[in-house]
Amino acid sequence: MPLASETTKTSELELEAIDYFVRLMSLLGMPRSVGEIYGLLYFSRDPLPMDMIAAKLGLSMGSASQGLRTLRSLKAVKVTYVLGDRRDYYLAESEFRHLLSSFIKEEIMPHLENGKLRIERMQQILGRETESYDEDFCRHRIEKLKRLQKASSRLLPTLAGLLKL
Amino acid sequence: MPLASETTKTSELELEAIDYFVRLMSLLGMPRSVGEIYGLLYFSRDPLPMDMIAAKLGLSMGSASQGLRTLRSLKAVKVTYVLGDRRDYYLAESEFRHLLSSFIKEEIMPHLENGKLRIERMQQILGRETESYDEDFCRHRIEKLKRLQKASSRLLPTLAGLLKL
DNA sequence: TTGACATTTCATTTTTTTTTGAAATAGTTG
DNA sequence: CAACTATTTCAAAAAAAAATGAAATGTCAA
Image (cartoon, rainbow over all chains, first blue to last red; front, top):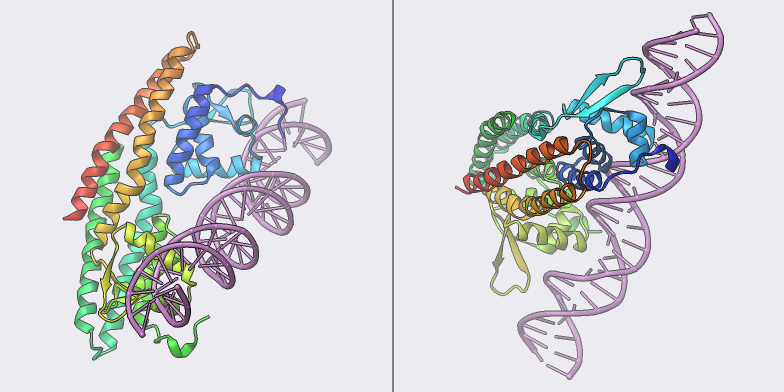
């Protein structure tokens, strides 16, 4: 637990941003700590080292480390080297769109790929099991899935692209 | 726990669909049970009553009831009345896009609205706290948030609209 | 009105996810 | 190389989310 003396008081604006991003991130299924860290960095002009982030937010080092890893992988945070200090300093990538775009690429697209395989499997199964009384019905449903699949495969990369600009 | 005699054997195709939709729904942050129910209904030509759904999936009535409520609210499921039976029968709305569209409207848009208010609050706070040394910096960041906000407010309803067609 | 059944609600239990904290690792400096 | 510090890892604890099951509610029909 950090001593009050070590932690600069968290400003009202920071609190507001933390709240805002905790919500936004949780919409993307990210844990609270990730939103907190990003929120704190969002209104910080100077880059912050991990231990200060953890102290300000009252997080353990473990959480901070894991949260920063996530943010780095989403390109939501940049690492800065500060002369004469061994620690890594972090800065928020202020274009949140970048984050959304990486999120689509990293978290959603793989599921889409996987979905394609599954639909193929469904077709195989239906092909094998002949003479089911509702074969036609199932065939139609599979067709619908394929259309959904195709539409998403077009739409999502486009969206990811749009966001980056 | 349902007796084996009450449960028609779940077909391979049904299993595949259940798996598929459990994943897809979990991407939207929906609990497992919701995906299971929708998956089961997706390849069922005949509407099914809640007790049969619960039996086939090995879910409690409570879960089935809650899951169907969610699916109804997303317009992912239609209720059918069967003559001479008191139970409600459920049918999957096969256009999954409808579900995505309701999801955007019901789950995401409210957060957006809320976000707008929060950004306004940030501006108020910044307005009050004069002479912070990085006031300009914060002002810029708030501007970025507003742009993100505006872009999403345009994009998401458009997307929801596109999906419905 | 009463009984039979379908459905919902909700306190409790179970499961899953997230956080913690301490140990392991890595890296730098004297 | 040895001492020090920053960071990561991971088993265990805590917290959050979901499922259960039994009681409450609603609804129809005899």
